[in-house]
Amino acid sequence: MQATLSRAVRFEGVGVHGGQRAVAVISPAPAGSGIRFIRTDIVDRPNVIAARYDAVADTRLCTVLANEAGATVSTIEHLMAALAGVGVTNATVWIDGPEVPIMDGSSAPFVREMAKAGLKIQKAFRRALKIVKTVTVTKDDKQVTLSPARWFEMSFEIDFAEPAIGRQRREMAMVNGVFIDELSRARTFGRLADAERLRAAGLGRGASLENAIVVDGERVLNRGGLRYADEFVRHKMLDAVGDLALAGAPIIGRYVGVKAGHEMTNLALRALFKDDTAYRWVDYNHQREPKALGMCFDEVAA
Ligand SMILES: [Zn+2]
Image 1 (cartoon, rainbow, N blue to C red):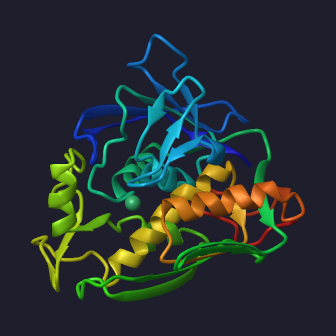
Image 2: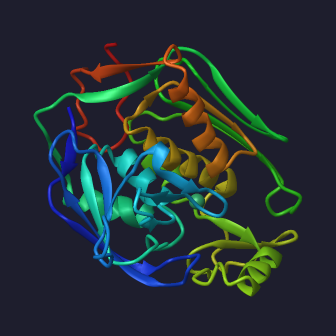
Image 3: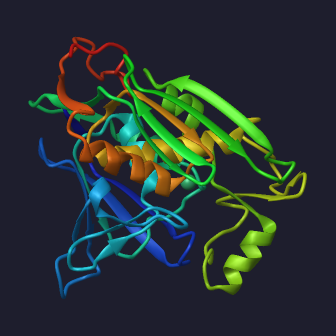
């Protein structure tokens, strides 16, 4: 069944790119409404922004959503991943600034508060997006493939020149709580040299060792080190969960990302939806409902 939060949860913090503080309040929403953002600081034009793949306006540094009036909200991916990972179908995110607070650079703070609030199961079937034909998008050495599978599975591979990151590959079936245990704590990351370059360009203003892993050659500069030995590839998977959530429903299928990022995942969704023989909407109708938090597509009656 569809689910929303039992009560509103509140987050406050700085945006990693713009450096502006914002308060985001995530409140319960009616069945069938999906996830949407409302920019409470915008009063002179429509301020509701749907969390949908076709509302993505920029993917260069983070995922930016926009509505037709040009109202935007940035860095939505870690929050979207948390909502998907916890199993929230419907919610409204009230935000008083242009960028979602980065918190600790992962989805964990969002997951923690939403888990504390708990889910409210709603009287409507949950839809899922079943992949029935393989779709691949490629750009230079980057690639994303969506293909049929019995449940939601992911495989991701990265290859960075920095010895601290290097080549990492991970594969997992995203069933029952795996997102929360294995991905939600993985933080965003960057190279020290890039951080300095971005700051000179007026970006990355909110970035710090409190909300990002910073690497320099073979060194991780954060005092506490890494949360997972392969935290980098896990964060890329977290990003993909958040970007895929813009499909508007959980996916039953396999996602394979090679050196991919926000742009490639969004292009894959656009390619998928352009080909109506590549997917099918199904009701998620299994007896094992999301009483435990987490993606519960361990078996699907489709
Ligand atoms: Zn990220």
